[in-house]
Image (cartoon, rainbow, N blue to C red; front, side, top):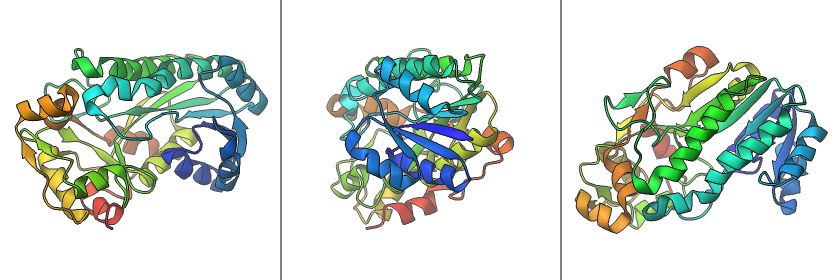
Length: 314
C-alpha cells in the first residue's frame, strides 16, 4: 500500500517508517521542517514538507500522495514537561489533535482512503474510579483535573473524529508511556536524567497505575493496525501495568540512580501542581487484550521491568 506518515521524524516515526518500508509499502513522510527532508529519505520514505495546521498545505500533500492509509503521529512534545502547567505544555499538541486531525481527515476524504490511524494516549484519559486497569470499553474521565481539561478534551476530540469517520476505517491507538530509543526514558533521555538528579520524586502513596510500551513494540503494533486493523480504539501497552510506587524506584535503580525522594501529596501538589499529583496517585492503567486478539500483536518487551534495564542503563 501507499502509506502517508504525518510526523515521520518523531520518536515513533523513526521506528515506524523503516518497518513499513521493509514490509514493502511505499511510504511518504510529512515533516514540517525542510531541513529534515534528508532524514525522512534515510528512513525509507519520500519526504513532503507541510504544516499540519495549514489546511491548504495538508490538502496538497494528501492529494499529491494519494495514500491508501494515513498515519497521524503528530505531536509537539520536545523539551521539558511542565506538569504544573499541563495544558500549556500540551497546547500545540492539542491543536495538532484537533485542527491537525480535522485537516488530515478533510484532505483524505476524497482520495479513497482505506484506513486512518491516529495516535492517542492511555496514560491519563481514563476515569479515575473503579479498578486499576481499564479496557477500551471503559469510560474516559468525565471531570479531569483543571490543569488537564484542554489536553484531555483534545484526546477525546481526536478519538471521536477518527472513529466517527464513516467513509474510512478510523483506528485510534492509545499508546502507553514510551520508553526506549529516542524517548524520554532512554539512556540519556530527559526523564532518565531527572531520575539521576533526584528531580523525579514519588508523590503521595504512588498509587497511580501507569502502563508503558517500548517504542519498538508500539511501532510493530502500528504496522499491524496499518495492514489489517479495523475501526475502533486499541490500547497499545505492555502486559504489566504498575503503580508509581513500584515502577519509579525500579526505573531509578535501572538508571543507576539513588531511590527517588518521597514527598506527601499536598507538597507535591503545591510544588508540581495538581496534574502531577493526579498522575502520581490517581490515574489508571490499560489492558492490551484487544490489541493482542484483534491485531495479532504481542509486545516483545512484555514488561517494563526488564525493558527499563535495557533502555535506561548508562
